[in-house]
Length: 368
Image 1: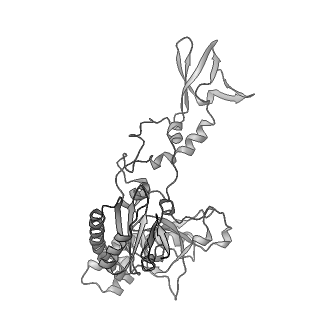
Image 2: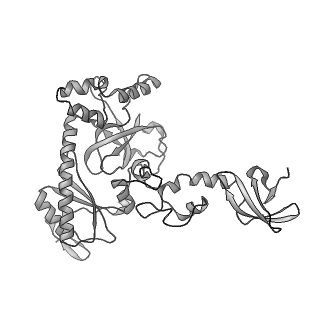
């Protein structure tokens, strides 16, 4: 007996099969907030994304051999593999003339911008080590602002994805569907208070990742025993939050576009109700909440703009004397740079921001 979970002992042979990651640990590897010197970082740096969880982190690539290898997108590799007349090696080497036109031209544009430097095209697939194990990643693009990159969090891209990797990816997708169904059925059978989100097979490691959400800590040791006896490989259970669930599963937002956390955001930024107030949005939770039930991620995107714009405008409630009448600011519109004022005589005026000046500790209205 070596440890316990909520007062229940754990046997030694169960330790290797159990790994619980709390929701706050499910974050993007985007650095520790430090600002290292530029000369401490390799060049060029790329942002890469995990295909199964949409997490992003920083990486670099050091080519080996005499030439720069060809990198291709998932669509290009799948089309090559579906072509029964193409030779694998020749197709990958010459695919720029068949289906890699866009990615190669993108690389050539970047190379022409900086002579002598070879770059990985955007949307290319590669193999890189991650915090879960070696897996397929998508290169999203080159990093230009390295102020928030922590050298300790960088990983090195090992090689481009090959057709064999795509075959294994397809096989894993089929196995993941089966693994998800089996794990879900066993969760229901044991009546565990947890919701299974997804299952994932790593590319080059005999391990299955199961993501789940739960409101409380769950004793899932019996579930792990069931899964180990069924799949005969290492099982890793990771508890994530509801916002992380939305990022993994994806979906459609109220705007009609893909969820920001799934297709746009690099990481999950904190969102507060104050952001909605400063943007003059309705505080109805149904209107400012996403499918995950939390505040919309997009509230944080324009918050800094509103915050900066409001510094040039008077706040609600401030009173003025204008045309011998006392007015009170009732609404400030940062987008249109207008201020609405209500006077004691019943008049309601809309004024442009340029008519207001802050001097001697108070706001004043400039006469036209």
